[in-house]
Length: 398
Image (cartoon, rainbow, N blue to C red; front, side, top):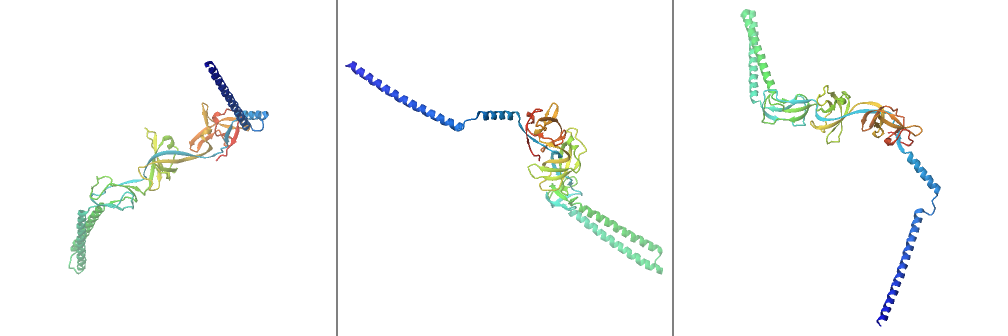
């Protein structure tokens, strides 16, 4: 019985495995069918309903090969224009004519300060006053002396007049007249001496006031009320005559040679976008032997944005020439010198040697080698060879 039971179990296992195998093959064929359908759909979507033309494909390949052999380059006929010679530099702002103001007289204790930095003052205006109590008494004394001398002179003149009336009647001799005349003259002389002494004292007292030598702008103040000042106190105020400012810019010797008085300039203080117009009014006649630099002084009108001691940049127009102007990308250089590529009538690249001039933000000035009517390669010149055919893309020059 055991043998029959074993045979029966084995047969059931074989039937189960066969069933599983048939199911697996069924799903395998379904998967293959799905993959085939998806592949066919993708093929038609990519290729389209119209089959490719072999001749058209060959033509496209030939055109691509021709385009690869003839590169497209940007060219322009630059013409000629006036190119300004620009000199740039930096320096410090300062008063064009700075006036130090100090004590002119004997000095004393400062009683009042009447101005502040930034104040505009006129010529002779009082900036500060010095105590003059003692000097005032001296002036009063001298004024009294003048009045005494004038009274004596009037008395001497009156006595002389009476004597001249009496001499006609013989009551006074000629000698008495001469003595009275001399007395009158001495009295008048004493008046003039007293007046001179009084005027001198008044002038000294006026010099106690610290005054502006010229009209202008007060830059600094170095004195306060109560301070004792004298001729040795140094500078109490600094002024800019007429409020005029300037930029003192350090320039290289070669740049300095290009400048002249009257050249127009633009000055931009550091930290500001405001540009101030000015002109060069002085070019230093001396070059520093150590730095090989000199100073150009640019005159500027007063503006609150210009502060003496500040730093600024200058852009000076030193002159101008008529030349061809090209972008820096158009100019190439090698061992033989500077050159550009131009495109001839056959659309072939031709090398042309040139001489360069000023280099600025606007481009490179070509002083010789071009007339301006040529078609000049603006970019990609470094990748061209002489005689190479190209497809020019003409760009309008500005």
